[in-house]
Image (cartoon, rainbow, N blue to C red):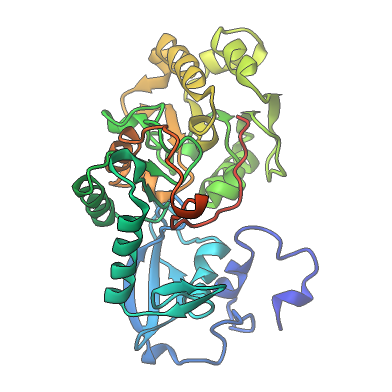
Amino acid sequence: MSLRWLPGAATGAHALTRATVCPVGALTAKPYAFTARPWELKKTESIDVLDAVGSNIRVDSRGVQVMRVLPRTNDDVNEEWINDKTRFAFDGLKYQRLTTPLIRQGETFVPAAWHEALGFIADGLRRSGAQGNEIQAIAGALADSESLVALKDLINRLGSDNTALETPLGDRPPVHGVDVRSNYTFNSTLAGAEDADLVLLVGTNPRHEAAILNTRLRKSWLERGQDIALIGPAFDATFRFEHLGTDLAAVKQLASGKGKFAERLAKAKRPMIVVGSAVAEHGEGAAAFAALAKFAEANKARFFTDGWNGFSVLQRVRLAAGDCPDLAARLARGGVRRRLRPLARGRRRHAQVHLPPQRRRL
């Protein structure tokens, strides 16, 4: 039996969890089915880095090949679930993966040793004549702390402070700041999200950005009728929500206490505001954060109590939620928005990773 014979049943972010909970083993995950025996595998406990939730996982490998990824039980984070992206993304380790440096020769790329690739980069930099802040370093979303430090050291040794993150407005300091950890983390905790009696989502789609949080919100909505509202683009949710608007005007209206939902939010026993990454990546993000923070401060007797912090930031990528935000902020803080001098042949030579464009609305 396969999940493909269940029309409409395998469309959610956790659809293939059915293969894990199947009591008789009739449902199998195709990438792993009939490829290895459980006792042949080395089991390594780890943390998922494909979103900012930090789901606990177990990586099963045979030799140097990852065979499957399974959830580890952690009631405070992901309980016993992981989303399908986490479960099957390891497939990318085997197909179309760059395992050696490539150097462009004409219209093609040819494999090269690391010393050849680094020498090619040094020669290209030397020929370009770029100096100081004409040289820019860009950090990707999956960079770890050590890589960020090494990148910043390298770019500083080249005499440049021009650094940025590969996100919208990535060359600017984060609008929420990083001096206080609670400014950029999910303070209500994932488990605590189920205890909130009224939730406001601002500029986020938890079904896409944090499927584990979406599952907890749906569970609370089904069991307790949790009251949920959204400011931002509407999405195909698994729970009902009240749509309050899509722009900064809607945020300011709520922050001023106008409207029935604002009144309910101010009177709730355990209110929770969840601010998404799209707000920080928006040109008016600073104003939105300031308005929401002002509203929470005005109602701090309900938002900030013993054992409860109702103001949370839901990051889209792990880089912005783990131990790296302060390092990432230093990279962004060093970014100078200066037009780079055209290099040889009128073309700008740089290395980058292309990602799908992100929504720019709240």
